Amino acid sequence: MISDIDIMTSELMPGNLGRIDDLDSIFPSNDVEWTTFKSFKKQLTKLKGRTVGELMTTSADVISVSPDSTVDEAANILIRNRLRRLPVVKDGSVVGIVTRGDILRSGLRKILKKAGLE
Image (tube, one colour):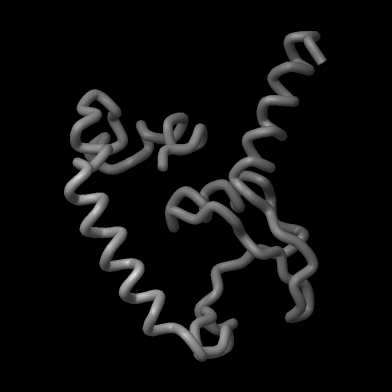
């Protein structure tokens, strides 16, 4: 799936790999999608009875920001790590989540306000 921010930041990718001039390289063929779906379905059946605790990312591996982090810092972390959501952590507890959409909307509001269109 390609999101708005993926398109907007495509020029930041090394070697400009984010260019979207070859749609065939972005969207797989139906055969590939069907094979992937069947493989995914098979993996899901293996998860029956397992707990979320067995699957979750542990706190040591979670990439997060603090409430005092700047929007630029959060945006860079999201882009560099190809994340869509980023937990906001204070004193070891999750206090919120910042998403690519949150950052994109914030930037668009500033642009609209500056243009007098808000």
